[in-house]
Image 1 (cartoon, helix red, strand yellow):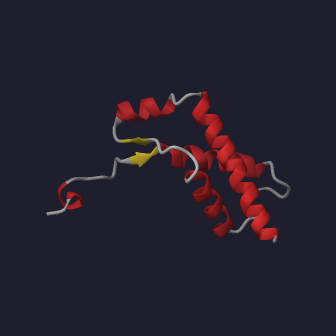
Image 2 (cartoon, helix red, strand yellow):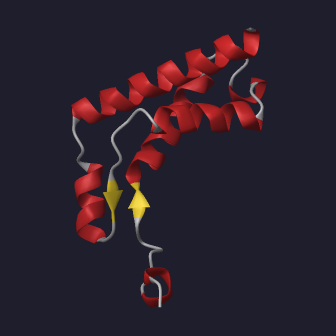
Length: 96
């Protein structure tokens, strides 16, 4: 019997995803033309690129959720920087 058959992993969440998506939405809203100027593939590529460049932040329960909400300024800056880099990378490849 596999772990997935025996245990529920539904509550295992990477909080970095939530933070990256929120930051991506905020930064794209500031771009000329806003979020609507990007295709779904471009936005997904941006999110994936940024997530691959920030430390994962997994949580599983209420205590983990509270911890994740108090991550600190350094992590927030890492997310902001990774998203900015992702937007620049995808924009440069789309224009190439």
